[in-house]
Image (cartoon, rainbow, N blue to C red; front, side):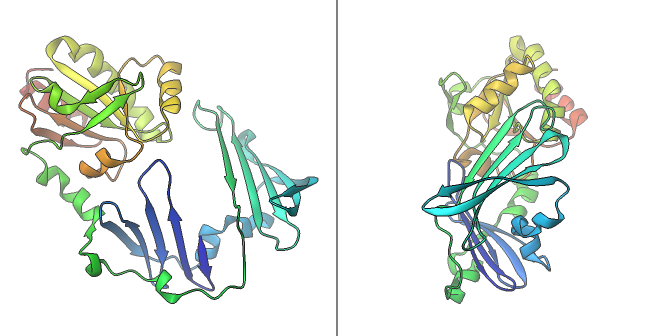
Length: 297
């Protein structure tokens, strides 16, 4: 994360998911996806420090802060502050005594606060510096330089551009570490449900997807969830609520990118010949009509 006062920001994110770079250039907020050469853009918020640097709003938080100890972190003397937030959520911050920058953040979200799943997040800032001169080029972006495409536009066009065309092939592993290749399912109708345990709308839609899995299995319907999270999260959630549908692990986001998914849940139906027959979200009647056409419903 690089910040140049008052209104320029760059955040590079790497991990098990797709790499991304967020750039606020003073007027536009860009989110850049180098691996797929795609981007999104929205008008930049007026006060990016309030949006991205929530630690600067600690004195306005709806919680009860308390200093609990003084500890060393990465050779820095830190004051440890615990904040009791709403719904049983607790947060602990290690604040550098010299720079007043947060060096470690522990966030504990209990099951009753997160919809049935306990979530603990540990964020560590191993290097934290202020006062350095930063290259202005770090806070600019031009899609024309790499001929990048607009991800939201691709997502809006997906129901038209993908329908009737061969579904992008992929190979993923399920929660039991078994390999699943789409091409190997030719002859079956395949339903892909792009979901996440963090997504409230996904949780609302899962009972219907589970029903389709149970009812359509003998008629040649193969139902798979596709989730970008760590396998243990999906496994725990599905087991907790008695779901039996298989879910595939897409931690690199390659499959969601190839299917141009930009909102969750998204449901894709692939016919027995391997072509996309339905693409959408929140359209149960249209999905049922398509399944009926394909001899499933």
